[in-house]
Image (tube, rainbow, N blue to C red):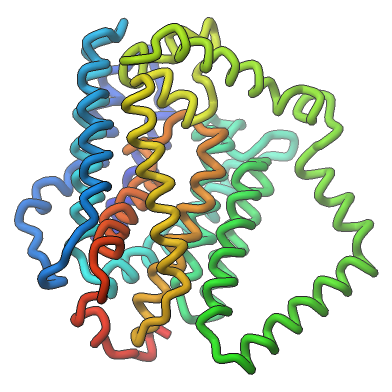
Length: 400
Protein backbone atom coordinates (compact mmCIF):
# COMPACT_ATOMS: atom_id res chain seq x y z
CA UNK A 1 0.00 0.00 0.00
CA UNK A 2 2.77 2.46 0.93
CA UNK A 3 4.71 1.65 -2.25
CA UNK A 4 1.61 2.32 -4.38
CA UNK A 5 1.15 5.60 -2.53
CA UNK A 6 4.67 6.76 -3.44
CA UNK A 7 4.22 5.72 -7.06
CA UNK A 8 0.82 7.41 -7.10
CA UNK A 9 2.47 10.73 -6.24
CA UNK A 10 4.59 10.42 -9.39
CA UNK A 11 1.62 9.33 -11.51
CA UNK A 12 -0.44 12.30 -10.32
CA UNK A 13 2.39 14.72 -11.04
CA UNK A 14 2.86 13.26 -14.53
CA UNK A 15 -0.87 13.54 -15.27
CA UNK A 16 -0.90 17.19 -14.19
CA UNK A 17 2.12 17.91 -16.38
CA UNK A 18 0.27 16.53 -19.39
CA UNK A 19 -2.90 18.48 -18.53
CA UNK A 20 -1.14 21.64 -17.42
CA UNK A 21 -3.05 24.90 -17.53
CA UNK A 22 -2.74 28.40 -16.19
CA UNK A 23 -4.66 27.51 -13.03
CA UNK A 24 -2.33 26.85 -10.10
CA UNK A 25 -4.96 26.01 -7.46
CA UNK A 26 -6.46 22.89 -9.06
CA UNK A 27 -3.08 21.11 -9.59
CA UNK A 28 -2.18 21.86 -5.96
CA UNK A 29 -5.41 20.21 -4.78
CA UNK A 30 -4.96 17.13 -6.99
CA UNK A 31 -1.31 16.60 -6.10
CA UNK A 32 -1.94 17.21 -2.39
CA UNK A 33 -4.75 14.65 -2.43
CA UNK A 34 -2.48 12.05 -4.07
CA UNK A 35 0.39 12.77 -1.68
CA UNK A 36 -1.39 13.28 1.62
CA UNK A 37 -4.23 10.75 1.76
CA UNK A 38 -2.24 8.41 4.11
CA UNK A 39 -2.80 11.01 6.84
CA UNK A 40 -6.12 9.28 7.62
CA UNK A 41 -4.20 6.17 8.71
CA UNK A 42 -1.20 7.81 10.40
CA UNK A 43 -2.86 8.73 13.76
CA UNK A 44 -3.81 5.09 14.26
CA UNK A 45 -0.38 3.77 13.26
CA UNK A 46 0.87 1.76 16.21
CA UNK A 47 4.46 1.87 17.34
CA UNK A 48 5.75 -1.60 16.45
CA UNK A 49 9.30 -0.96 17.58
CA UNK A 50 8.62 -0.82 21.28
CA UNK A 51 10.14 1.88 23.45
CA UNK A 52 12.84 3.98 21.89
CA UNK A 53 14.69 7.18 22.51
CA UNK A 54 14.76 9.73 19.72
CA UNK A 55 17.25 12.42 18.87
CA UNK A 56 15.50 15.69 19.78
CA UNK A 57 17.50 17.74 17.29
CA UNK A 58 15.56 16.42 14.31
CA UNK A 59 12.31 17.55 15.95
CA UNK A 60 13.71 20.96 16.88
CA UNK A 61 15.17 21.66 13.46
CA UNK A 62 12.00 20.66 11.61
CA UNK A 63 9.78 22.65 13.97
CA UNK A 64 12.04 25.67 13.49
CA UNK A 65 11.93 25.30 9.72
CA UNK A 66 8.14 24.89 9.56
CA UNK A 67 7.58 27.68 12.09
CA UNK A 68 9.73 30.19 10.19
CA UNK A 69 8.13 29.05 6.93
CA UNK A 70 4.69 29.81 8.33
CA UNK A 71 5.74 33.35 9.24
CA UNK A 72 7.28 33.80 5.80
CA UNK A 73 3.89 33.14 4.20
CA UNK A 74 2.73 36.48 5.62
CA UNK A 75 5.24 38.39 3.47
CA UNK A 76 4.69 36.28 0.35
CA UNK A 77 3.38 37.98 -2.80
CA UNK A 78 1.13 34.92 -3.20
CA UNK A 79 0.09 34.32 0.43
CA UNK A 80 -2.73 31.86 -0.23
CA UNK A 81 -0.56 29.62 -2.40
CA UNK A 82 2.26 29.84 0.12
CA UNK A 83 -0.07 28.82 2.95
CA UNK A 84 -1.39 25.97 0.83
CA UNK A 85 2.11 24.73 0.04
CA UNK A 86 3.10 25.15 3.69
CA UNK A 87 0.12 23.09 4.88
CA UNK A 88 0.86 20.34 2.32
CA UNK A 89 4.55 20.31 3.28
CA UNK A 90 3.76 20.17 7.00
CA UNK A 91 1.33 17.28 6.61
CA UNK A 92 3.67 15.43 4.24
CA UNK A 93 6.56 15.87 6.65
CA UNK A 94 4.44 14.46 9.47
CA UNK A 95 3.41 11.46 7.35
CA UNK A 96 6.94 10.57 6.24
CA UNK A 97 8.49 11.16 9.65
CA UNK A 98 5.81 9.11 11.41
CA UNK A 99 6.28 6.17 9.05
CA UNK A 100 10.05 6.26 9.58
CA UNK A 101 9.65 6.34 13.36
CA UNK A 102 6.97 3.69 13.86
CA UNK A 103 7.16 1.19 11.01
CA UNK A 104 9.56 -1.75 11.61
CA UNK A 105 12.67 -2.28 9.51
CA UNK A 106 11.12 -5.30 7.79
CA UNK A 107 8.14 -3.29 6.53
CA UNK A 108 10.31 -0.36 5.48
CA UNK A 109 12.45 -2.80 3.52
CA UNK A 110 9.31 -4.16 1.86
CA UNK A 111 8.23 -0.60 1.01
CA UNK A 112 11.59 0.15 -0.60
CA UNK A 113 11.63 -3.09 -2.59
CA UNK A 114 8.09 -2.76 -3.92
CA UNK A 115 8.64 0.91 -4.76
CA UNK A 116 11.70 -0.07 -6.81
CA UNK A 117 9.73 -2.70 -8.77
CA UNK A 118 6.63 -0.55 -9.37
CA UNK A 119 8.63 2.49 -10.37
CA UNK A 120 11.02 0.49 -12.55
CA UNK A 121 8.00 -0.86 -14.43
CA UNK A 122 6.62 2.67 -14.75
CA UNK A 123 9.92 4.01 -16.08
CA UNK A 124 10.23 1.19 -18.63
CA UNK A 125 6.73 1.95 -19.96
CA UNK A 126 7.49 5.66 -19.95
CA UNK A 127 10.74 5.21 -21.88
CA UNK A 128 9.02 3.03 -24.46
CA UNK A 129 6.17 5.50 -24.97
CA UNK A 130 7.81 8.87 -24.32
CA UNK A 131 11.36 8.75 -25.66
CA UNK A 132 11.97 10.02 -29.20
CA UNK A 133 15.42 10.55 -30.76
CA UNK A 134 16.46 14.16 -30.54
CA UNK A 135 14.48 14.79 -27.35
CA UNK A 136 15.48 14.27 -23.74
CA UNK A 137 13.18 11.92 -21.87
CA UNK A 138 10.15 13.96 -20.79
CA UNK A 139 10.57 16.77 -23.31
CA UNK A 140 8.59 15.27 -26.20
CA UNK A 141 5.15 15.30 -24.56
CA UNK A 142 5.98 17.40 -21.51
CA UNK A 143 5.11 14.60 -19.09
CA UNK A 144 7.93 15.63 -16.82
CA UNK A 145 11.09 17.65 -16.51
CA UNK A 146 14.05 15.52 -17.70
CA UNK A 147 15.99 16.22 -14.50
CA UNK A 148 12.99 15.24 -12.36
CA UNK A 149 12.66 12.00 -14.32
CA UNK A 150 16.38 11.48 -13.80
CA UNK A 151 15.82 11.82 -10.04
CA UNK A 152 13.10 9.15 -10.20
CA UNK A 153 15.48 6.92 -12.16
CA UNK A 154 18.15 7.52 -9.54
CA UNK A 155 15.77 6.39 -6.77
CA UNK A 156 14.89 3.21 -8.70
CA UNK A 157 18.55 2.20 -8.90
CA UNK A 158 19.28 2.87 -5.24
CA UNK A 159 16.08 1.28 -3.89
CA UNK A 160 16.62 -1.74 -6.15
CA UNK A 161 19.66 -2.61 -4.03
CA UNK A 162 17.24 -3.57 -1.26
CA UNK A 163 16.52 -6.78 -3.17
CA UNK A 164 18.77 -9.74 -2.43
CA UNK A 165 18.06 -11.38 -5.79
CA UNK A 166 20.85 -10.36 -8.18
CA UNK A 167 18.61 -10.38 -11.26
CA UNK A 168 16.12 -8.01 -9.63
CA UNK A 169 18.96 -5.73 -8.61
CA UNK A 170 20.34 -5.69 -12.16
CA UNK A 171 16.87 -4.95 -13.56
CA UNK A 172 16.40 -1.95 -11.25
CA UNK A 173 19.92 -0.58 -11.68
CA UNK A 174 19.79 -1.13 -15.44
CA UNK A 175 16.46 0.70 -15.67
CA UNK A 176 17.94 3.48 -13.57
CA UNK A 177 21.01 3.88 -15.76
CA UNK A 178 18.96 3.83 -18.97
CA UNK A 179 16.43 6.39 -17.72
CA UNK A 180 19.20 8.71 -16.52
CA UNK A 181 21.00 8.37 -19.86
CA UNK A 182 17.86 9.13 -21.90
CA UNK A 183 16.94 12.06 -19.65
CA UNK A 184 20.45 13.48 -19.87
CA UNK A 185 20.38 14.24 -16.15
CA UNK A 186 24.02 14.64 -15.18
CA UNK A 187 23.22 15.39 -11.54
CA UNK A 188 21.25 12.13 -11.29
CA UNK A 189 24.22 10.23 -12.76
CA UNK A 190 26.60 11.70 -10.19
CA UNK A 191 24.08 11.05 -7.40
CA UNK A 192 23.68 7.42 -8.48
CA UNK A 193 27.45 6.86 -8.58
CA UNK A 194 27.77 8.32 -5.08
CA UNK A 195 24.88 6.22 -3.74
CA UNK A 196 26.26 3.00 -5.24
CA UNK A 197 29.69 3.80 -3.79
CA UNK A 198 28.25 4.36 -0.31
CA UNK A 199 26.32 1.10 -0.50
CA UNK A 200 29.36 -0.80 -1.78
CA UNK A 201 31.73 0.42 0.94
CA UNK A 202 29.13 -0.17 3.66
CA UNK A 203 28.61 -3.71 2.36
CA UNK A 204 32.34 -4.42 2.18
CA UNK A 205 32.81 -3.15 5.74
CA UNK A 206 30.34 -5.80 6.94
CA UNK A 207 32.38 -8.68 5.49
CA UNK A 208 34.97 -10.72 7.31
CA UNK A 209 38.60 -9.80 6.73
CA UNK A 210 39.40 -12.44 4.08
CA UNK A 211 36.30 -11.70 1.97
CA UNK A 212 36.83 -7.97 2.44
CA UNK A 213 40.39 -8.16 1.10
CA UNK A 214 39.25 -10.40 -1.78
CA UNK A 215 36.55 -7.96 -2.87
CA UNK A 216 38.87 -4.97 -2.63
CA UNK A 217 41.52 -6.85 -4.64
CA UNK A 218 39.00 -7.64 -7.39
CA UNK A 219 37.86 -4.02 -7.51
CA UNK A 220 41.46 -2.80 -7.69
CA UNK A 221 42.28 -5.20 -10.51
CA UNK A 222 39.13 -4.26 -12.39
CA UNK A 223 39.91 -0.57 -12.02
CA UNK A 224 43.45 -1.07 -13.34
CA UNK A 225 42.18 -3.03 -16.35
CA UNK A 226 39.65 -0.32 -17.18
CA UNK A 227 42.27 2.41 -16.77
CA UNK A 228 44.87 0.65 -18.95
CA UNK A 229 42.73 -0.72 -21.78
CA UNK A 230 39.45 1.20 -21.83
CA UNK A 231 40.36 4.71 -20.68
CA UNK A 232 39.78 6.27 -24.11
CA UNK A 233 36.26 4.82 -24.71
CA UNK A 234 35.24 5.66 -21.14
CA UNK A 235 36.52 9.22 -21.55
CA UNK A 236 34.57 9.66 -24.79
CA UNK A 237 31.42 8.22 -23.24
CA UNK A 238 31.72 10.52 -20.23
CA UNK A 239 32.26 13.56 -22.44
CA UNK A 240 29.29 12.65 -24.69
CA UNK A 241 27.00 12.38 -21.66
CA UNK A 242 28.29 15.12 -19.36
CA UNK A 243 28.91 17.47 -22.34
CA UNK A 244 31.87 19.24 -20.77
CA UNK A 245 32.68 21.14 -23.98
CA UNK A 246 29.17 21.53 -25.40
CA UNK A 247 28.27 25.07 -26.48
CA UNK A 248 24.81 24.84 -24.87
CA UNK A 249 25.29 22.68 -21.76
CA UNK A 250 29.06 22.68 -21.27
CA UNK A 251 31.28 24.13 -18.58
CA UNK A 252 31.60 27.44 -20.45
CA UNK A 253 27.83 27.99 -20.20
CA UNK A 254 27.91 27.92 -16.40
CA UNK A 255 26.05 24.62 -16.21
CA UNK A 256 23.34 25.58 -18.74
CA UNK A 257 23.03 29.00 -17.13
CA UNK A 258 22.59 27.66 -13.62
CA UNK A 259 25.40 29.76 -12.17
CA UNK A 260 23.53 32.87 -13.31
CA UNK A 261 20.29 31.60 -11.71
CA UNK A 262 22.12 30.72 -8.50
CA UNK A 263 23.49 34.25 -8.37
CA UNK A 264 20.00 35.70 -8.78
CA UNK A 265 18.70 33.41 -6.04
CA UNK A 266 21.47 34.51 -3.69
CA UNK A 267 20.70 38.14 -4.49
CA UNK A 268 17.05 37.58 -3.52
CA UNK A 269 18.15 36.00 -0.24
CA UNK A 270 20.52 38.86 0.58
CA UNK A 271 17.73 41.36 -0.02
CA UNK A 272 15.36 39.44 2.31
CA UNK A 273 17.70 37.66 4.77
CA UNK A 274 15.40 37.03 7.75
CA UNK A 275 12.01 35.74 6.54
CA UNK A 276 12.79 35.40 2.86
CA UNK A 277 10.25 36.32 0.20
CA UNK A 278 7.63 33.76 1.20
CA UNK A 279 7.35 29.98 1.26
CA UNK A 280 7.70 28.62 -2.31
CA UNK A 281 7.56 32.18 -3.70
CA UNK A 282 11.11 33.00 -4.80
CA UNK A 283 10.35 32.14 -8.44
CA UNK A 284 8.18 35.27 -8.65
CA UNK A 285 11.33 37.33 -8.19
CA UNK A 286 13.43 35.45 -10.76
CA UNK A 287 12.44 37.64 -13.73
CA UNK A 288 11.38 35.01 -16.22
CA UNK A 289 13.18 31.97 -14.79
CA UNK A 290 11.10 29.21 -13.22
CA UNK A 291 13.31 28.97 -10.11
CA UNK A 292 16.87 29.23 -8.83
CA UNK A 293 17.39 25.55 -9.76
CA UNK A 294 19.24 24.94 -6.52
CA UNK A 295 17.28 23.54 -3.60
CA UNK A 296 19.60 25.04 -1.00
CA UNK A 297 19.58 28.56 -2.45
CA UNK A 298 15.83 28.38 -3.11
CA UNK A 299 15.19 27.44 0.52
CA UNK A 300 17.20 30.37 1.87
CA UNK A 301 15.50 32.74 -0.60
CA UNK A 302 12.05 31.45 0.39
CA UNK A 303 12.29 31.32 4.20
CA UNK A 304 15.43 33.28 5.11
CA UNK A 305 18.50 32.38 7.09
CA UNK A 306 16.86 30.88 10.20
CA UNK A 307 14.53 28.50 8.38
CA UNK A 308 17.19 27.71 5.79
CA UNK A 309 19.87 26.88 8.34
CA UNK A 310 17.41 24.71 10.28
CA UNK A 311 16.40 22.45 7.40
CA UNK A 312 19.86 22.29 5.79
CA UNK A 313 21.36 21.38 9.18
CA UNK A 314 18.71 18.66 9.57
CA UNK A 315 19.66 17.16 6.20
CA UNK A 316 23.37 17.09 6.91
CA UNK A 317 22.80 15.77 10.43
CA UNK A 318 20.76 12.95 8.87
CA UNK A 319 23.55 12.21 6.40
CA UNK A 320 26.13 12.04 9.20
CA UNK A 321 23.92 9.80 11.37
CA UNK A 322 23.13 7.36 8.56
CA UNK A 323 26.72 7.28 7.30
CA UNK A 324 27.95 6.49 10.79
CA UNK A 325 25.34 3.78 11.28
CA UNK A 326 26.13 2.22 7.88
CA UNK A 327 29.41 0.94 9.28
CA UNK A 328 27.89 -0.49 12.48
CA UNK A 329 27.61 -4.28 12.48
CA UNK A 330 24.18 -5.72 13.31
CA UNK A 331 23.05 -9.26 13.90
CA UNK A 332 20.20 -8.79 11.46
CA UNK A 333 21.09 -8.35 7.75
CA UNK A 334 17.70 -6.81 6.95
CA UNK A 335 18.21 -3.75 9.14
CA UNK A 336 21.72 -3.37 7.71
CA UNK A 337 20.36 -3.30 4.18
CA UNK A 338 17.71 -0.72 5.02
CA UNK A 339 20.32 1.63 6.50
CA UNK A 340 22.69 1.13 3.56
CA UNK A 341 20.00 1.91 0.99
CA UNK A 342 18.71 4.98 2.82
CA UNK A 343 22.26 6.26 3.36
CA UNK A 344 22.95 6.00 -0.35
CA UNK A 345 19.62 7.62 -1.16
CA UNK A 346 20.27 10.57 1.17
CA UNK A 347 23.85 11.01 -0.04
CA UNK A 348 22.80 11.07 -3.68
CA UNK A 349 19.85 13.35 -2.89
CA UNK A 350 22.14 15.95 -1.32
CA UNK A 351 24.02 16.11 -4.65
CA UNK A 352 20.88 16.08 -6.79
CA UNK A 353 19.19 18.85 -4.86
CA UNK A 354 21.93 21.28 -5.94
CA UNK A 355 20.22 21.25 -9.35
CA UNK A 356 16.57 20.81 -8.35
CA UNK A 357 13.97 23.42 -7.42
CA UNK A 358 13.10 22.53 -3.81
CA UNK A 359 14.85 20.88 -0.91
CA UNK A 360 11.63 19.50 0.58
CA UNK A 361 8.97 18.68 -2.00
CA UNK A 362 6.01 16.48 -1.07
CA UNK A 363 5.06 16.34 -4.74
CA UNK A 364 8.02 14.03 -5.33
CA UNK A 365 8.20 10.41 -4.07
CA UNK A 366 11.97 10.67 -3.59
CA UNK A 367 11.48 13.52 -1.13
CA UNK A 368 8.97 11.35 0.77
CA UNK A 369 11.58 8.59 0.98
CA UNK A 370 13.99 11.12 2.50
CA UNK A 371 11.36 12.14 5.07
CA UNK A 372 10.95 8.47 6.02
CA UNK A 373 14.73 8.32 6.40
CA UNK A 374 14.48 11.27 8.81
CA UNK A 375 12.17 9.30 11.07
CA UNK A 376 14.44 6.27 10.96
CA UNK A 377 17.54 8.42 11.48
CA UNK A 378 16.00 10.07 14.53
CA UNK A 379 15.43 6.63 16.02
CA UNK A 380 18.96 5.45 15.22
CA UNK A 381 20.60 8.62 16.54
CA UNK A 382 18.69 8.51 19.82
CA UNK A 383 18.88 4.80 20.64
CA UNK A 384 22.32 3.48 21.63
CA UNK A 385 21.26 -0.15 21.36
CA UNK A 386 18.90 -0.88 18.52
CA UNK A 387 15.46 -2.21 19.17
CA UNK A 388 15.48 -5.82 20.31
CA UNK A 389 12.57 -6.46 17.97
CA UNK A 390 14.74 -5.42 15.02
CA UNK A 391 17.68 -7.53 16.11
CA UNK A 392 15.54 -10.63 16.56
CA UNK A 393 14.21 -10.57 13.00
CA UNK A 394 14.83 -13.91 11.35
CA UNK A 395 16.66 -14.11 8.10
CA UNK A 396 14.32 -15.53 5.46
CA UNK A 397 15.15 -16.61 1.95
CA UNK A 398 12.89 -14.13 0.21
CA UNK A 399 14.62 -11.26 1.99
CA UNK A 400 18.12 -12.40 1.00
